[in-house]
Structure formats: structure tokens, C-alpha cells
Length: 435
Image (tube, rainbow, N blue to C red; front, side, top):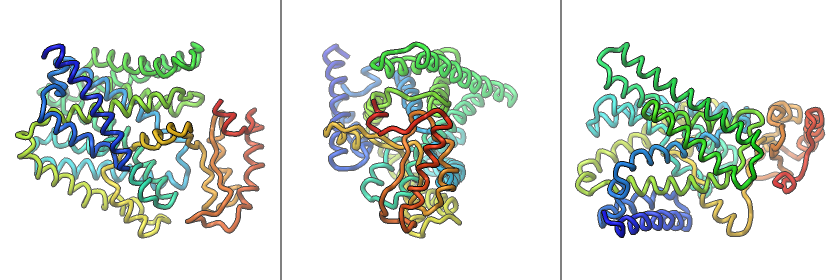
């Protein structure tokens, strides 16, 4: 390709990506629904946006580093201290039942309908466990179910992204080891070696990031850039030592940073914005490599795989996971149709930015709408009361509330203040905390 074609292709890919995201936010639909058709159409009309031609040999390494960044950010979202006891039971059942059921049914459907070899079919099933940042948040914002169900589904999506990614990476290592080795022993050794390199890289990356954020006294303007540089550097180093181990390392660094005590996550907004752009470019670029000739024979079988996931796998998972819970029949049915899964927050952030506002989530949820006593609420909130935590309580009675008044919430406040005092902390307004 000429210099002019490369410039035109790179600019067109970026403009199309951002344009599709803006259009999706206007239509209040997941961006993937616009990016994939746009990428496919652009790839069919011009070869300038084809990343394999634009980047040539650099295409695969750059995709690997981009995915490593995505997995790191996905790990940052999983702050287990925010998962309250009531929600935890349903979410864990959705994940623990949903992951194996989706993997098995996805693998069977891929093998039977798409004619994939067994190893590739299993890998496809593992990838389908976390079907990418796509759908849940926009649907929840549009349909607006009860708060408890919205909280359950959002947490399931947040957990399934790293769990599905980890499962896919492990299966991928297994498939590669089996293909490269003649005996089971040799294959097992290669598999263990890949896992070991990824885990060691994750531990090393976490240590370096801890030192950089806690000891180096970095200016706030450099924090996000340092995070990105460390994650990309660790992922690349692991891949140099052992192919495709950098993804596992990046995911471990993100999970560790989100959950280790005292490990704050500054620069989150920059990383989230960068993630949206990277995901958009990835989806558009991958779609641009698909030709109409290659898509034709696979279209109906692929739709068949989607039908198996949406019409069979997801309803089975939701019914089994929510059986015996306090979710109503309508809420269980709604949960059964929330597939594919994913997390998208770009539209909300853009609206907030337009009005000069900052979106702040809570760390500790009282769930006081349930009607629990102050003692019960304090018992499940105490562990999350630490420096920088945002506490959510309600001063009114909204739809779905089971309490008759706010008396238990009022009684809860002195208990929480006493806990903070014992830990050498104090309560401040959100605006002061943000400073």
C-alpha cells in the first residue's frame, strides 16, 4: 500500500469507529450493532481499511496488545467488595452454572452447525462464555427493570468478562499444547508452562504497578499512562517468553489492582475512554477482514449457534441459577433473555461529560430497600468500609421497596460512623472525596 492509502485507511477506520459509537449512543443501542455492519461494508467497498493490509505483520501483535489492555480494564471492574451477600448468591450461581453450560452447548453447536474440529469448537464455546462488551447496560437503561435485578445482571456481566476470558485463555493453551505435542505428558507440560508464565507475569506486573502507584509519587496526569505502559510492557514480555501468555498476565494485573487492599484505581476515566476506542477499532477492523464470499456459507450456521445460546442455553442457566431465590417469575424470565452479555458505559459517560458531570458509582450498597434491620445491614457492609469507599443509602421509598419507612437506615448511620472511627477514618461528602 502507498503512504496515501495508509493515511486514508487509518483515518477512515478511526472516523468510522467514533462515528458508529456516536450513532449508537443516539439510537440507544449497543455500539457493536453498528460497528460490525459498518466494518463489513467498509471492507467490502475498499481495501484501505483492511488492517491486515494496513499493518501487515504488525497486525497480530497489535491485536494481542489491544486485547491485553481490554482484559486489564475488565479485571479492574471486578471489585468483589462491592458484591453484597444477597446479590452474591444469585450472581455466583449465574456464573458457576452459566459458564460450563454455555461452553458445552456453544462447543456442541459450533461443531455440529459450523463443522469445527473438536478443539476449535471447545475454544469457541469458551470464548462465547464472555461474549464481549456489548449489550447489558444499554438494555438495562432502556428497559429499566427493578434495581435488584439490574444489579444482578450488571454484576454477572462484569464477572463473566474476566472469567470467560480466563477460561478461553486456558482452553487455548490446552489446544495449542495438544497440537504441538505427540504425547499427553508433553502436552500437559506445555500447558502448565504457559499457565506458569502468564501467572508469573501477572504477579510481576502487579508488583511493578504497585510500586509505581504507591511509591513513585506520580503526578495525577501520568497515572493512567503509567498503568497502560506497564500492562502493555508485561503482556509483550510474556508473549516474547511464551506465545500468547500476555493475555493471562494482563487479566491478573487488573484483577489484583481492583481487589488488593489499599490498591486504588486512579486514572479510570482515561482508561475507560481508551477502552471504548480500542474495542471499537477491534470490532470494526475484524469485521473489515470478512469478505462477502466467506460470510455467505457461514451466515445461517452462525445464526443457528446464536439461536442455541439465546433460546436454549441462557434460559436454562437463568432458570436453574435463580431457582429458589426471591426474584419474581417475571424477573427470572427477563434474566433468561439477557444474552449475549457484556458491559457498555460509554453512552452514559458521554452524556455526563456534555453536562460537565462526573459519574461516580458506589462501593458499599446498604440494600436498605429490602427491609433488613440496621444490625443486618451493618454486618454485610462493615468489610467494605475503608478509605475512599462510596456508601449508598436511600432516603425514600421507591418501586420495589419492602420497608415501611427509613427508620432502620437512620439507625444504621451511627453504627457505620462508629466503624469508621474505630478504623481511623471519617465520613465526608462525595464532592470532598472526589477532590
